Length: 167
Image (cartoon, rainbow, N blue to C red; front, side):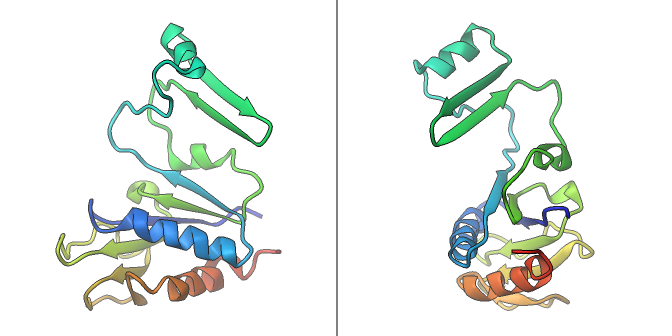
């Protein structure tokens, strides 16, 4: 069975990362193994600190760098093109759900995050939007939650995307 994928989308500054942190913690507390993907919309980011061995490998020309330790592994590689979300999640194993920050064009179920001080304009398409988390009431045709109502949002995700999964 495919791992369910839920995207968390919204304008910059809406609170996506903060809400996602809380959702990860809540779903983990409930016993689910959560995987995440963060879309970085600008080219070029470093996960390594200058001077570290893996950074030095990349600077020397390695196109695929793996850092392996007894308790974790990290891998990064240079790309000729941006990967689609499906290509990225194809390698996920050992998780019950994948929560994605961004990738609003991926045509996956979307939780839209809206903060009034930012903008009330939504970025997800109505056919992919399954819920909205906002700090003001909005006129939407999907369940709406306050930004801080993480337990209720997790309840919806659990019911909609995890209830059918074998635990």
